[in-house]
Amino acid sequence: MFLKKWNYRSQPDFLLLAIILALLLFGVIMVYSSSFVWAEYKFGDSAYYLKRQLLFAAAGVAAMLFVTFIPYHTWKKYAKLILLLCFLLLLIVLIPGIGLVRGGARSWIGIGAFSIQPSEFMKLGLIIFLASILSANQKYITSFQKGFLPCVLLIFSSFGLIMLQPDLGTGMVLVLSCMVMIFVAGARILHFTGLALLGVLGLVLLILSAPYRISRITAFLNPWEDPLGDGFQIIQSLYAIGPGGLMGLGLGNSLQKYFYLPEPQNDFIFAILSEELGFIGGTAIILLFALLLWRGIKVSLEAPDLFGRLLGIGIVSMLAIQAMINISVVIGLIPVTGITLPFLSYGGSSLTLTLCSVGILLNISIHSKM
Picture 1 (cartoon, helix red, strand yellow):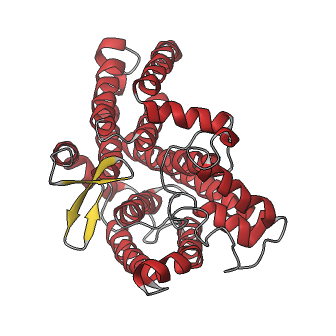
Picture 2 (tube, rainbow, N blue to C red):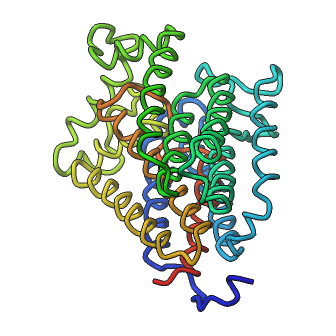
């Protein structure tokens, strides 16, 4: 009823859509360029990853367009059910024989020739649910017991299930994006200060509890101490970025994808992009993400109600934080965390859920006052 009274446009924000499609196009091109050597060696088909990425992209764009014209208030009606299903998937993936182990984490559920990653669903599901309860109970957000604490307990319950896989990178993206939503909703700085101190302590304990995380910290501080072990990936990433220079070696001319940088089409695709397209290409991608952040925030703040504003901010924060963490890992600013670069990295459920998320954002833009 509320949306029917609002004078809104019939089309989504064109600039936001153009940014999304530009990032997606970059991604398809770079997935092929970074993977054709490995695909030829492993599958005897240099276009193996390209074909699958095109399939994922087509499905994702179709889903995005479908979601774009679903009124965003619809998600509020089903927020509890969506969150319940996401929790159920996170429990199912932990069952041996159902959850698939990749890279040391039980994060995937196999469905035929494809697989889904439940933590990707949880990121979006929790954002929808938080936007729902925060908009309905904003008057309590300054209260620690009635507003702040219930939200934090929900977030860290989700984080705990993700850490049982374990998947620290995805968990960090989930927590940080949800914290941005709570901050925008009007939570007190004092509560965030106390939570930050506990968070730092918890992060230290998580690192100390797993030897491989300590190894990643050691490799981050001095990758040359173990150049063929824990430091190998970041060293090879820097070897890719360095020779790229200003203009790059040219599209398709990367040397590091020749079995030096492991699976370059995934988490470290930005390294191959920087090697082939240079500083200019890497900067172009960063600028596109910056434009996405700016336009997404503008669309969200112009939404006609608090639910739309919080939902949009949550989605934009999720994408921006994930991109920032991924690029920071690739260029050696933070330890390796193992998360994809939105729109660019090879992947099925990650790309599809990302495009569905921006589909919701595009629908918010239809109803915004811009």
